[in-house]
Length: 162
Image (cartoon, rainbow, N blue to C red; front, top):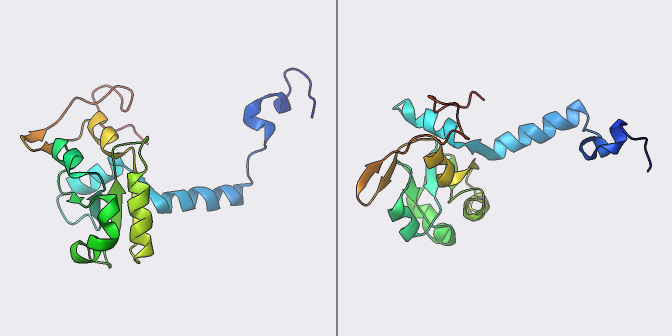
């Protein structure tokens, strides 16, 4: 396919046209059925009541000890099939997380849980973005909180406004 300089087809963004609105609704709706983000999880926990889901940290014990989201359940991804039935109520949705965008441990844990019949979502950004967005976390030494990374939220706010 050839195109004239400056034409829309010359730009990689639109070389493959956008999906139809109906296809986009199906795709993005499905994406939100599988994913949530750290800000939404933090907001659910901030309300103080039952968030309606269990947050599951799928990392190793060493990683958990280094820092984890308060209120999370620790269950390494490799142990989900063996231990989930003893730790989790199948009627309660589970949200999984691992280190961050460069780690697929939360995805592996979510798959294992789904194979066991659990309803599950993955928390995008993982523990890395939990900390980068300025939310508190627990370590063996106690509770910690870092200032929000200005690349993840507007200055003076822990909320990106999405």
